[in-house]
Image 1 (spheres, rainbow, N blue to C red):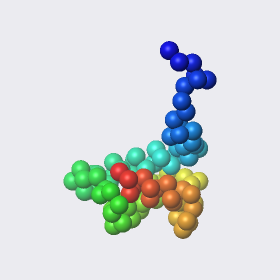
Image 2: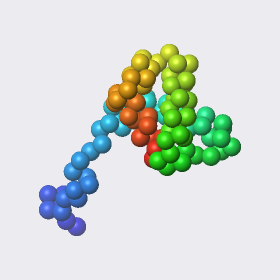
Image 3: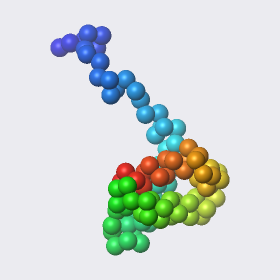
Image 4: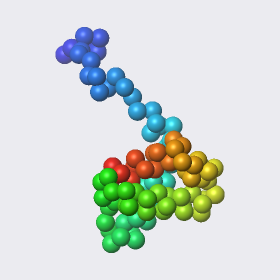
Length: 94
């Protein structure tokens, strides 16, 4: 067995995705939004890269944030914010 020091470095592992760790609450809310989207659309998932589906999905997530009186609501509604980007990336890549 090769030691960790001598093993070849996988470039995919060299860059960590810390966004998921630091934004776990909004990602959880996105999964709740996905459940609502599927319930409203006969169990259909948002179509990949569909702008119409992603807008509908984002509105559902914002509704959940409003219901929960989340402190992330303001950022989710702000154009170009990191939270809004996470919501749309989630919707576009389901």
